[in-house]
Amino acid sequence: MKWFKKVLIENYANFSGRARRQEYWMYALFWSIIVISISILAEYTEEYLGFTWGFTFFTIFSVATLIPWLAVNVRRLHDTGKSGGYFFVNLIPIIGRIWYLILVCTDGDTGSNQYGPDPKRLYEDDEIDDIGKPLLED
Image (cartoon, rainbow, N blue to C red):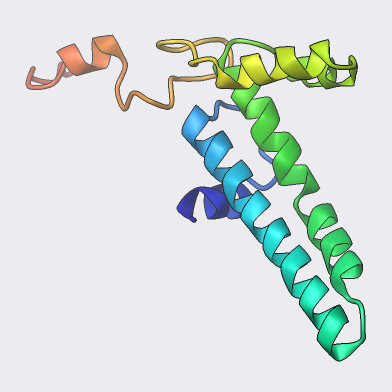
């Protein structure tokens, strides 16, 4: 759940930087669980109470999570060294979806790339070598 909150609250419209596979897939998992829960609850309330609210609530939820969904997709592509424009590969029937799935499943670039530091590594190689050395004073 912390990954879902991270995407929705901390990085709501953040299209810069990089997102790990774990951040991307955990967001997708919790989004799917919420959508399935909405569908099940809507079905039961329609059947037993006689009113429909599911489509309206699903539409509101989808619109509210559209920008974070796009942002996490773009950051995931950045992690693999691709620009956010590769998201439009999805528009190519069948092959585009397969290619995009491969892109988001691919491990990110090791170390920094043009989109930012590696989110898996806390320190860069040269920074880790400096630990324990005295600071140089100017």
